[in-house]
Image (cartoon, rainbow, N blue to C red; front, side, top):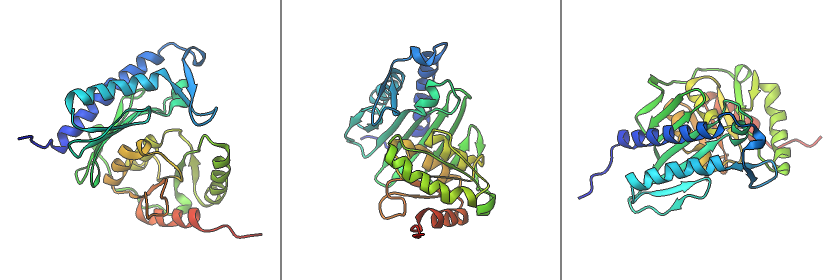
Length: 268
């Protein structure tokens, strides 16, 4: 008879594999210029994927297949397998590829495991700083060994808000309209380039909110759990105001941002 793994065990496995993938990414980036890294593109000319993305995903997928051969896989770079156990691992092997290619700090490895109720455990690891955020459903969130939450109570005018932009030009034009509504109403806006890290910034208080209207499941699977377990409200998925995206903030702040981001434009 198979014994169901504990949430702690699942988080520990995610952490082990995130650290291994982070080491692979650091080794591949060390000492290279952006022109020396093999780069292809995906959805547009500005949407890059490198050999490092694929190598990182292989480290994670191989580790999961060895440790949990019946679990499902869903990875940004193509890892896919149906689940025989009710658990599926959702993998972003390199969130923030552009930052990685340019030698910036804001890139990470994101790994979550989901059951029929959603994310059960998640880890986001930032290799350049060594910081790791993690969470277990109904078990709280941590930044390394520090317990996170609750988010601070802040009004819209005092909020530092993170967002992200699409690689598609027409969608960026729509995002520009949203930004024109938000920017005058808040303290300031940041665009870090990694959805997973933006969600972790809401969890640890280095930002007050994060929103993006169109996002992929691997971008937010771990980070959204971490933010939620730190006390943020997460608005995401079918039946919400962000069916294809995400909004994360303390509940009162989330309500104010939601009004800004979903109120129809008035004709002039």
